[in-house]
Amino acid sequence: MNSTELDTAYTALAEAVGRVGETNASLMLATLSLSLISKLENLDEALTLIKQAEELTKEKS
Image 1 (cartoon, rainbow, N blue to C red):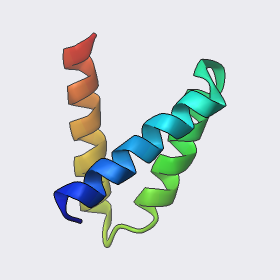
Image 2 (tube, one colour):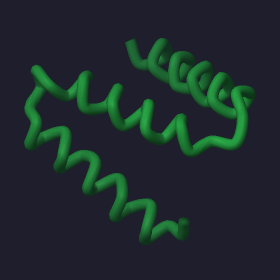
Image 3 (cartoon, rainbow, N blue to C red):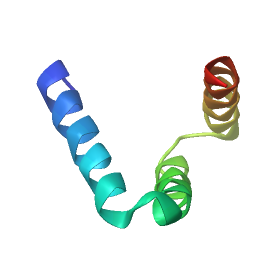
Image 4 (cartoon, rainbow, N blue to C red):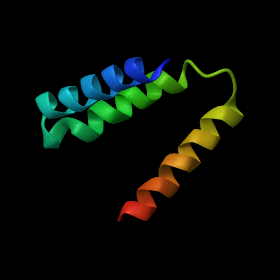
């Protein structure tokens, strides 16, 4: 994905989260995450991305 496509996807995600609302945002993001994980080639990729997201989230709190 090029930078324009990435920006379009990010914007679509942000807008979708806004439409579902704060109460449903976690469920929507979990559902999306599971869908994206299923597209990965192997378990190591999934575990690496999960760990990365966890670490980035810890830094923000």
